[in-house]
Length: 119
Image (cartoon, rainbow, N blue to C red; front, side):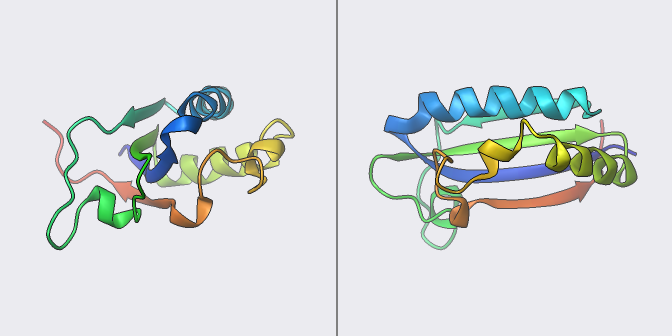
């Protein structure tokens, strides 16, 4: 069954171009190591909810936008193998440095998901 890692993060709008460059590089690395798909989406219609919402989840600040992303794998086991390779890949190291990230990694929300419904 397919398996997905999902992410949401607040990205300063002034750093969005740098974020896109980083995402393209890391996405290529994920695909080279076996991920089936790598997608990044920027918020277009994401309102602040009264109790919860994407902006509230990432503690969105003025001048920031929400990015929603996912990486698709064949299975959880394949995901674990791919992620280990990505983390060991020397090209990933510079992008994992918190000082080099074009976003606040402390507000990154992520997790792995197994398929529930597929139509």
